[in-house]
Length: 224
Image 1 (cartoon, one colour):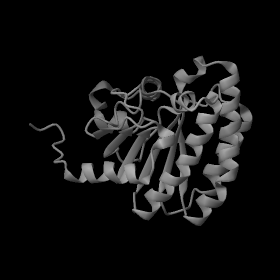
Image 2 (cartoon, rainbow, N blue to C red):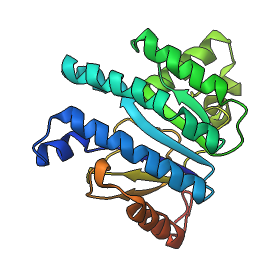
Image 3 (cartoon, rainbow, N blue to C red):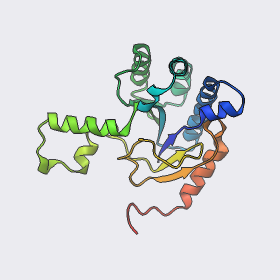
């Protein structure tokens, strides 16, 4: 099973607590560990997290600096967790614009976990689905692939997620009812589950509620 999550509401959570926005991101990072461990215990095959959108660069520089610092801290801090649970990490998104020190940490992380056989943890960093599709089209054009040979499989094979199964379930926190340019191609037939709780309040009990609801649904994959 492949679960994708839009971890929304860190800033709103902080505001409601009377805290600065970066405190919400710190609380959200701590929640990631809990949900990753829950996926391992429930034998989830892949978890894809929307960590940083390509649109997030529009945020204030102070918040961006705090996010990058937190991201670096999280990568280093959780390396032991990844080793213990045999988790394999991959990263999708454009590398342009990401600070070199973050790219270096991500490259090390993906390298040292490449041969792990447990949960596949995919991090969407500087990710935007429209950018992904544009990049896929550019690859197809650069390879001079004939129009008659371009089908859905051809496009899938040139996305950042090549080789990954499409998500079965999308979870979005903080009550928003939109995809926010996240995995638009891959989520075509995914079930969607939304909670009003902000990401820092999304605990394992809430995660299990989403899984139980998913299990009761009859997936039609486009059928009536």
